[in-house]
Amino acid sequence: MHKPVMLIVDLTTSPEETSPAEDFRHYFDIRFCAKQDQVGVLLDRGDIDLVCFDFDYPDWGGLQFTIETKDACPSIPMIMATVQHSEELAVWAFRNRLIDFLVKPVRCADMERLSQVINKVCEAKSRESREGILSLPSPVPDGIAHVPPSGQRTLQPAINYVTRSYRNKIPNEVVAGLCGMSPFAFSRAFKAAFGMPFRDYVVRYRLREACRLLDNPNVNISDVAFAVGFNDVSYFSRMFKKHFGVSPTARLKRVEQDKVDSEEPDPSATQELRLPTKLLGDNIH
Image (cartoon, rainbow, N blue to C red; front, side, top):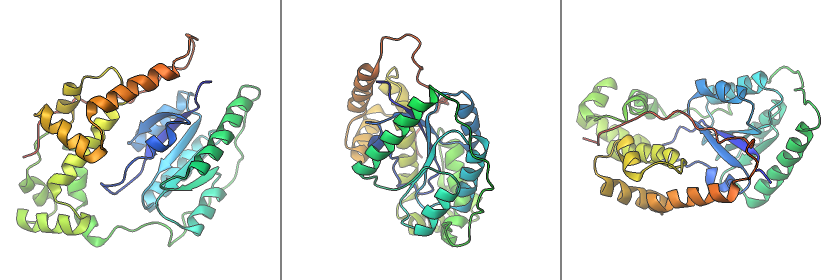
C-alpha cells in the first residue's frame, strides 16, 4: 500500500531542534520544506496528503503562517508538532481546523492514530471531493507565542546570515559586525544565548542541510559534503556520525533500502517530490 505523503514545514527556531521525520517515516512518505514561500507551490502540485507544521517553541509569525496556509488550502489535513506543552495552544490549533496537536517526541500511539486517520482520508478522497469548512480563523492570542530572549533577538542578524551564506566562509568579524559587536563580545553573547559556540552552530546547520540532501538516494557523499560547506569529506563524515549516530554512508544506504521497499510496479505512482537544492561550498573559518 502506498504511504500517504506528509510535508513537514520546518518552523523551528532552535539550532538544536531535530526534525520528527524519523518518527513519522514508518507511516508516511516524507517531504521537507524549510522556506515558507515554497509551501504554497508544493501544495498546489496536489500530491501532499498531510502537512505537519514543525515547531520547537511557536512564535507569532509561525502560528500566523499556519493559519494562512490552512485558509489557503482548507481541504488538506494539517497538524502541528511542538515541544511546548500548552493546553491553550492545543485549543487554538483545533479551533483553526488542524486535525491534531502533537507534543515532541511524538508517542507511537499518537503516530498510529494519526496514520489511521490519514489513511481513511486518502480513501475518502478517491471517492468524493472534500471541501474545506469556511470559518474565521482565531487570532493568535497573547501569551501562547514564544518570545525569544532579548539576547537571541540581538543575534538574529547572525542567524539570518548563516541561513543565506552557510555555503561560504563565515568569518566571526562579519557576523559580529552585523550584530553591532566586536568578535569577542559576539562570541560570548552567542554562547550565552544559544548554549554553544557560533562555530558549532554553523556546523550543525550544515549537517542539517546534509540530512536533507541525503534523502535523495542518488546523491554522492563527497558531493553532499562539498555542497553543505565542508572541504574535508573525512571531517564531514566524523561530524555527521557524532551528531546523528550513523555515518552518511549508512544513512544513504537506509534511504536507498526505504526506496526499494516502498517502490510499486504501477508506473503511474506519484513520484517523490524534492525541493530544489542549491550548490554550496567551502568550510568554516
